[in-house]
Length: 260
Image (cartoon, rainbow, N blue to C red; front, side):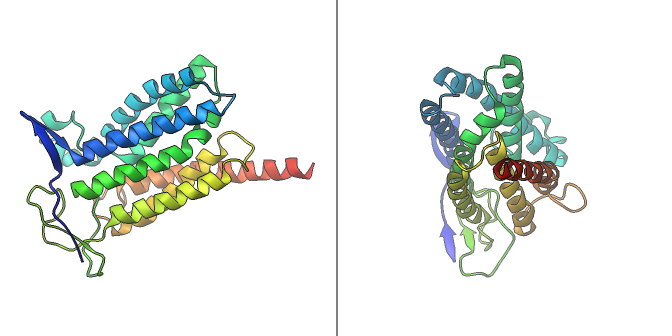
């Protein structure tokens, strides 16, 4: 089994502690912005200023929505500790993705200077890459771990400050997701120039990640949210209910266009 003896706190400056999780989330956001900027240089439909403005809208809306979903999911705890509602330790991946998407979509409607679907397609590989980096932070932090297991690749957290269960072998669901995200990253790179309709690649990303979260959370520790399912599973079902019909419709349109 794999023993992880990492202090979630990377370093402290006086009373301020900086966690590995926070560092990796920051690296993930920077990676996504750099991906978008580099992509904009090669895309006549995008510009540097547009990407920067979209980031200035998407990052805060993603953080706010991410925190909101986390607080709703853990409301039993935060209702007893309202002073901790505002913070950065607990964030929701779905909240970050959907919150940022909502903010940028509204920005596209107001500015009328770019296609939200096109921009979403361009940055989709960057999004899943950023999520991969974020899961590295989860692994070091000890959060988002799986249920107990006797498998030889189980993770056992041993550091007294870890957010994981100390001394108990659990599924390394964070590592599972890192591997899955890298596979999806490769798939998106292969498909990004083959799809004609704006937004199609983003829908594929959302669909693949929804299927993954719906399945992996059955072996991941978490709080029942609705019908015994985790919040992420419920959100995944809602996302699939939207993306699958849209993808089927788009595939038919592309097939009809190809047929002439």
